[in-house]
Length: 471
Image (tube, rainbow, N blue to C red; front, top):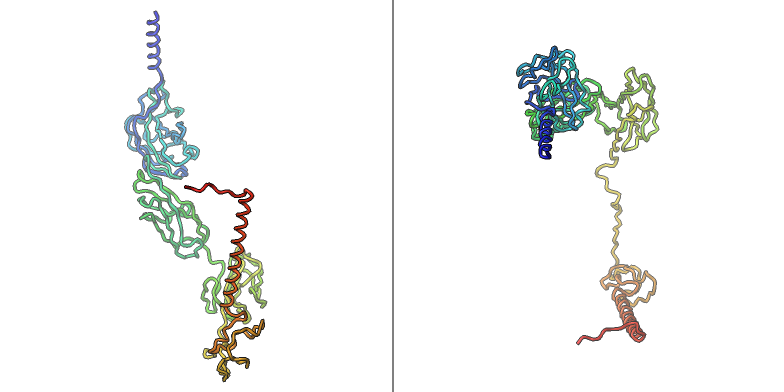
């Protein structure tokens, strides 16, 4: 009886296992055209798809599963989130279909989902394409469609871009320009740097939604030149698209602001030629000063840095441009860095810098220097005294030092042949060395005696001990 019971339980378990609903499974791979896109677009996944087979041929009264498709993205936790609901272009899908348009215009009632909360970072994501019912647009259950099949595809996401395929190498692109504040009509060069440098493809340069042009990336660089940007601020981006999207991912640079505007300040010379920034001006030179971006109709005063000269006022025109037609550098201007200081300020411009040139030299080129003595009196007057001692003192050359502490007796006075002018007030180096040696010797004797006494005292009082001598 026990054996029969065990056998019966086994049969029940087998039947139960066979009756469990089968999980949904991929029955093939669908194709996507184009093979890349941008997640921030209004419809992130667009273009068309190709079906490798037919939807399930199941019809229950007016319910069927071969007239509509839904596209899902598999999230990181394994759950599915809809990307497109209600694709019906070219239905019924009772056979393999090469092209099914995903465009909203070809699919009335198409629901497009924002994928920002679904695709949360770079990586590979699975897409699943299901045949859904024609009434609620829901995926079939095992009860209605055995196997609950779907077609799959994978995309690789890098930043805001996605590309069909798994394991495409991510890329990055950065953007620089030769000038961020060019003047109208000034040509600038936009340079996109693509990493890795071996990624092959093209870079599209865009001004907001407007395409400026494109260039092929070579050794990680792509350049584009333009001089047609109108006045105002522009958000320029560079988008890299690989020649082989399955090998290299797409990428986009962060926006680079380029503001086209006339210069905020100008200095012009008397001929009307524009001077360079912080030019060097001579005293007495007249220039024209133009400042832009000021409050229209405002009155401005002018002063010069480190100078008290009074200059005329000026008023800004209706475009906020204030002009001083003639400003002359004063004759008493201080040499070096200076500026035309106007008030009030036209933020962020507060002054127009320039440098006051050094005055021309007033001395003729043949003038002797001040260090030269023009007199006929020679500086080294000869003497009849053969010793060279002009003091009239003893010429015997004695070194006895009889002058005591009087430094005049031992100082160098003439440098005579006898050498008396080289003696020192203390008896010379030899005498000094002898005294040092004497005191050093006495000090050494005292230290040796003190050491001997300390050793004897230590041994006698048990403070020092020595081991037995070695055999």
